[in-house]
Amino acid sequence: MFKKEFTPGSRSKVKSSAQRAIRAKVLETYPLLEPHLDEILPKKEQLDLLKIPDRVSLYCLGGEPLFYQHMDDPVIPHLKVVHKYPWAFPRIRIDRGAIRFVLSGATLMVPGLTSPGGRLPGGEDEKYDNDGDELEAGEVVVVEAEGKETACMVGVLKMGTAEMKEKKKGPGIENGHYTGVEEAMRLTGAAEHLTNG
Image (cartoon, rainbow, N blue to C red; front, top):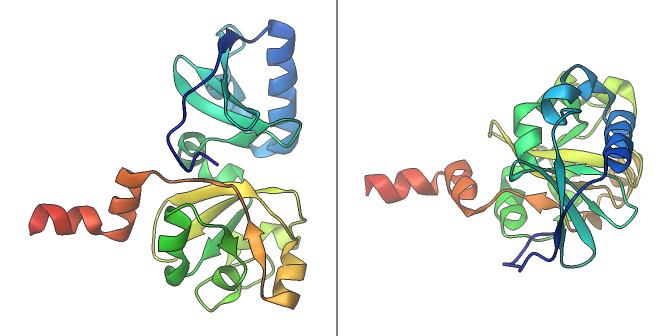
């Protein structure tokens, strides 16, 4: 998702009833955001809806993207929201070898998650434990990269994490929202290389 330049479609104001429904859906999907929901989606502020290609709705507040949704799929947070509230979302981690593929918009493949540098729920690493629960296909997850501090992708799982551990192959996440070029350069160290030499 958002792999190439696109021309946004129509922009409209979200009705207050629809805005309440979006708030409820966000709260239902991401209960850990509850204490911060008024900061993210203030009740008195006007939420805008921007239609973009492939039937995707992008919800913005004051020009700042917050969430997007493909038709009736789950509401997915924009990476700006994920970076501000990283602990509020289920997380998985890819190994170093998968970083460049994810940042170029490729499908996240399961071997990047099941290799020694990857992390799925159920391991020893508390950060990715998910309270001991496996994640199911269709759940929204934040993808972090081995050795990096911020999330590089957010998307919907194509298969559950228990199945990933068992099969160890196949697509893990397709059409995720991933970090842009400037952030990709920072994550991979390319920006330092360009400025230093």
